[in-house]
Amino acid sequence: MEEAMRASTKRFAAGEIVKGIILEVRNKEVLVDIGYKSEGVVSRGEFLDPEAIKVGDEIDVLIEKLEDKEGMVILSHEQAEFRKNWDRIKTICQEGGTIAGKVKAVVKGGLIVNIGVEAFLPASQIDIIPPKNVAVMVGNMYDFKVVKINEDRRNIVLSRRELIEAERADRRAKLFSEMTPGDIRKGTVKNLTDFGAFIDLNGLDGLLHITDMSWGRIGHPSEILKVGQEIDVVVLDVNKEKERVSLGLKQKLQNPWEAIESKFPVGTKVKGKVVNLVAYGAFIELEPGVEGLVHVTELSWTKRIAKPSDVLKPGQEVEAVVLGINREEQKISLGIRQLESNPWEAAQAKYPPGTKIKGKVRNLTSYGAFVELEEGLDGMVHVSDISWTRKINHPSEVFQKGDEVEAVVLEIDKANQRISLGMKQLGTDPWSSIDQFYKVGDLVTGKVTKLASFGAFVGLAHDIDGLVHISQISEDRVDKIKNVLNVGQDVTARVIKIDRSERRIGLSVKAANYNAEQLKEEQKILDALKPGEDLVALQHAFDAADESRDR
Image 1 (tube, rainbow, N blue to C red):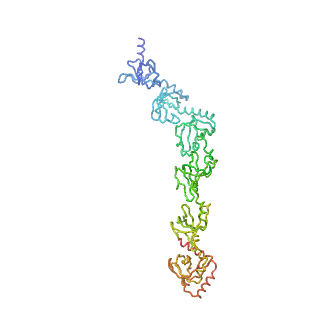
Image 2 (image 1 turned 45 degrees about the horizontal axis):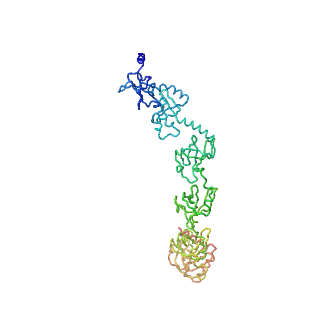
Image 3 (image 1 turned 90 degrees about the vertical axis):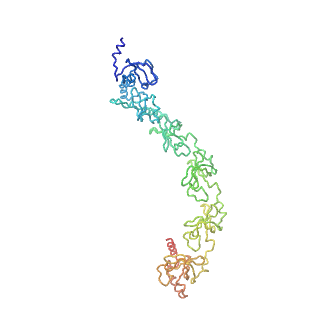
């Protein structure tokens, strides 16, 4: 009777907090007796530890609805706890304390955590490195720091990250006090950059530079590491003032350069892979961590290779010969041409000066023509060694690529790998016997080969050119030589001057019909000229002719 009287005095209204007894624990809900005409239900997910609840336990509940469609009372244990815990949570927040809580659900921007009341954990405050899948945290218990509370809205903001950072700071301080260079530590790859990797040493980040990852060549850290990977690293340096730690991975292995001379003695034939091509040579990997350089000049004895990429490509397997080793600078010089015999060694004996050769014109330059003596061996005919008598400005005036020519070996420079050839040396210099061919007063014929502003060049016998000065063309004044003469035109002229030192012959067309007396008078005029005023064939006249031809 007394219990019935007490029950009759209970207030049963939505929003009220009452005590109840657990009657039954189901899969998704808990049946509770609050002394009302019907039992109430509480969602099982509202309990911090659903496995711990049992029949007969007394709990506080908030009446959300006295009767639903099925006549059941809808209760909330969580809301009742919220009201009870609010003052306690408020005190913790003011003190900046920590509190345990269970992750209840994933929401936009973070997580809902049950700490006796519902609180919000922003995504940025979940961890130092936000987990990729926060859903795995639902249902787990963690410690949190209360960072903000809004009494009006009764909102609480939590942070798990701040607790982790504080814990890491403690561990970092301890690590700095214990760590010394040479230590081997376990760590986790936290981040990769172009220049290296940051390794988490359980509270302290260290830098593993790309140059300390491997003795071999690495283009990017991702070639050997990945984020989240656990590795053992060597502590190289500890800077407590700047709180920096330098780490190494390759230092766990022996430096391959320590016994390099015994591995690759000078003169040894080696095999390797082309790993890099630059303008001046090719880098060949002989083993991980050991590369040698083949300079561009060591690729071929005879071919002039402009750049290594013309004959090699990355990844190509090649053979080479060790030319030199510098262990201190970790450099090995290699040569590929040394795999074959040097044709220049035999060239001196095979082609001594004076040897006559036949070959094809392989290339033309402004200063001469390259003639192939044999496969891979060229000689050069300089423009000055093409003709005794003609001034040749470019070898293309005489021949073109592919022409078969004869020449004589003038000199072999083995050190600089050059063979000098001459074509004019195949015959004698006509100027050595010029008196036998031409005398002043001789009447000669020839074809006009060049025109210049000051006169015309005439091709004579014995491959000799003569110059008719503009004043020696006609008794009448000639303003422009092209108005009187044309290239290819046949002319008859009189030899009026022979200059051995300048290797020039002066001709006169107007004097072709002079008698002996008139020739003497003309000769007096020429002899009376000062040096440099010779109307016939001084050097500057020929130079001017060259300039005119170029234009």
